[in-house]
Amino acid sequence: MNMVLLGPPGAGKGTQAGFLTTAYDLLHVSTGDMLRETVKEDSKTGREIAEYMNRGELVADSIVTRAVIERMSRPDAGAGVILDGYPRTRTQAESLDRSLKESGKSLDVVFYFKTSEDVAIRRLSGRRVCENCGRNYHVVNMPPSKDGVCDICGEKLFQREDDRPETVKNRLFVYGESTEDLIEYYRASGLLREVNGDTPAEELFEEIKALLLKESLI
Ligand code: ADP
Ligand code: ZN
Image 1: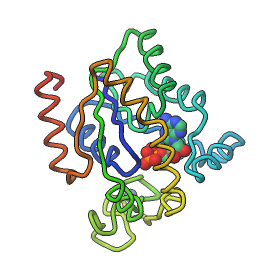
Image 2: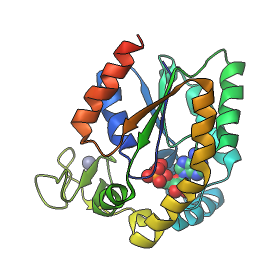
Image 3: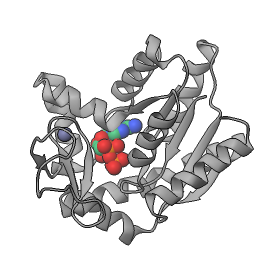
Image 4: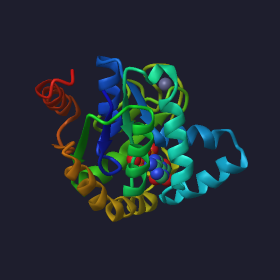
């Protein structure tokens, strides 16, 4: 099964993707995570990507699309993927469809996380990330047992550069600009399923599972 998670920054796509990969044999493909890995390498491309990300702007389609397609062609993606943060524009959606077709694959479902702006802002501003294992926390909603320390691996938590208020605003703006087109594209294809991104994480996961069951996807 191949699915897309679509929604604004702070919608909780990454959290649901985490639940889904734990429950089913699916690969979580997060373009945000992949780009942050490239940034860590400290190459010329990495530095360019970091500039866009830190401003909350989109990284070039060609870079992102190439990375996603490459990732999806590896053996561990065989049983299916959860695309999180991709596609973000209609152009990316069209590129994705083309490349899936070329490899005899297709999308099964697109979950649209409809989320109110104040919920998204609160989630992003309180988010803390483990610098070692990437696990996400929230200072209020999902705090670690020990302040500033990862429950899983004991390493330090930090705030993402692009989770600072000025950048958050721009990320939401950039999302708003491209989203309508993208939603329409998937609505027309009949794959779009709308869920409420404001719903607490565990409850939303139950809803998503129920929808997947109903469509015989799990
Ligand atoms: P969020 O979805 O919460 O904004 P991500 O970690 O998915 O967070 O993305 C962070 C940044 O990475 C984006 O603001 C953008 O700069 C870049 N990025 C991620 N996915 C894409 C994409 N599909 N196309 C272009 N840029 C992307
Ligand atoms: Zn950790």
